[in-house]
Length: 150
Ligand code: IDP
Ligand code: MG
Image (cartoon, rainbow, N blue to C red; front, side, top):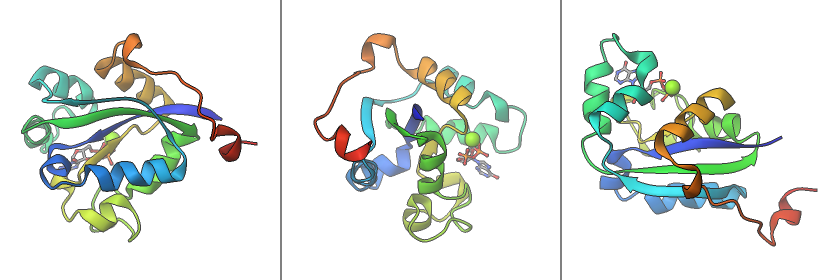
């Protein structure tokens, strides 16, 4: 099923110059970009985004990390993209992330794991709504689509 997910390249990915490499992987997979914006995320928005982790020991450092510089907030579309992107990202702890995954290739610690992707279609809807207005979502057809989807 074609669905959408929320993807964030965290401030470390921007600082380390990994944006092109990561977006290139999503493009090469055939996923379609629907929205992108570079954003220095306000603390309140970071706290809402990560609300499920409130109270955990890593919550405050996490909010500090995510708000430490601009992040690239995006919406991407594709076949089962929520799970597919989580697989491409690799495990939360880069030490457990397989080589070939984004975290497995480019990160070392959980607290600097460079990318966020929604963990379910419901989370995706919630997160897209937190970061984007409807008019920022670019619905569009591509001539390549029939070569990706039969
Ligand atoms: P996920 O990003 O793979 O979905 P979650 O468990 O939802 O992982 O955690 C959200 C984010 O919080 C992680 O990506 C990571 O940046 C941070 N985080 C999670 N657990 C820890 C930890 O034990 N230490 C430091 N940061 C953590
Ligand atoms: Mg998560």
